[in-house]
Image (tube, each protein chain N blue to C red):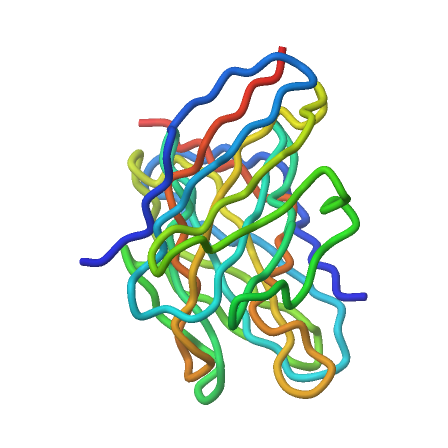
Length: 114
Length: 117
């Protein structure tokens, strides 16, 4: 069964450092997303990406965040200067299209900012 | 703005007990509805979904959910839980059609289910 893969599974970084979280969506999917889940809180939408551009972003997704699809397979989330409050589990998801399919989630990257 | 409410933060049941987890959403238009499950240490997995048709949907592992449009609800049920159902359950909604945020799933806060053997 095809799956969304994320690397690394756990990243520890110092405050102020840049991090890049990587995702490989399912190959024939067209819509890509990043969500995050702070420990003990709900899953929150960050950004959606379609046709090589951001289609929607939440208030959380400020100028410190950026996304890219540098080639045909990877989908990355960059946090330019990490803050303690960026510590969370980050989930990538992909969706094939709008004909009754659901989003598939990766296993997540646990980001710890120290 | 869309929002999703899950009424129970933590539910503790014994094996073989029946389960019902509440989910209400606020959005006036047409929605797609989902229940995801997150087992300890694992990623979100789809349990079931409702797009259209029969409002009673059946998912994996014996779960089902009923969409009641008049109540803006999509409660999750299972007649007899097992210890392996211990997990966190998330209800999610996204809007369809014009003005909807395609693919932007809005999640509830989640309900942690603990099943005692």
